[in-house]
Picture: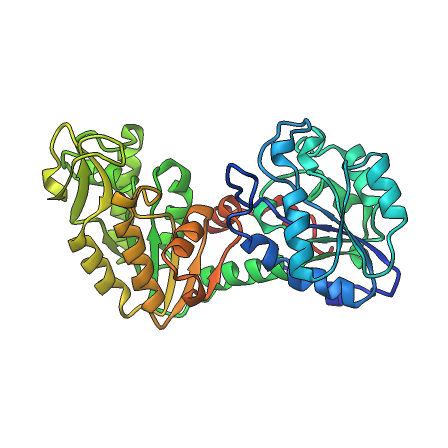
Length: 398
């Protein structure tokens, strides 16, 4: 894959650059940013452009405002945090391609940064509208995409906009290049043994990724809600646990394929079950074969943690995508956090993909121990599925 980096562009002092970032950060009920990792990860590209004396216009989205202005999804908190991280004022526009944004862009000085309002306040963004893309392209002589988290979407600011730039005027930002580099290396030349730890609630969302990973990994660990579809496929009673009955045949195929390829396939051997889905529910540990009819599995048990820890011990490459249980509730977070600690202790390459997994790693206090934490959930999953992401394909040098 042939992509320009910002270093390949002939940037001169005074050049204008439209930079697409992914500042889709979590906010609490008071509008405060609870995790600024996505903002911090974009800093190398922004600082590179500032150091080159460029006039920088940044576009991003936040949440799903459905094509209309909604103060709840304003990027003002992001501008405030970015100003603090850059140690310089970030100018905030009141609109996206309206008079305020345009006048502020015209008056930008060298090394200054302008942040546009939420791109998704304009319904044309998610429709990949070429007219909207053209208006965005007017902000920069150069275009840089550093938003891996939306690169699996064909949206105006990441796909249609590239039509207005030739190969010498468009590039992937440092973060986007890093993301691609890690995932492609992971899938093409992993250091072995390579272990995939796959969790999350549903098999359906990760079916293609599981199939694509099978002929690349040496071992596969399955946890989270998706494990119950596999356990039921093996003939176990899973009570009221989350199961996708229509995917039981697919689960059997995955296990058969793992056996054919010689991939060691691990499922939880014990489960934390509850009488209902609530923080104050009654809880007990049971073997995977003994889930009571009216109870539901919400986390992996201590024996599973020990087993998975043994499996991970000799791993040289670990890919983790998806939590082991309902980690947002304290009672059911132990399995996810303990697996996070086990992965963090490993001496191998540790790559974390997926928004929930990244959040769990941070809550467990293991983020500094991981080799790489991806900023894109859906995008990383589609890369694992072997798909070509539209925004990345649009940046390829012909």
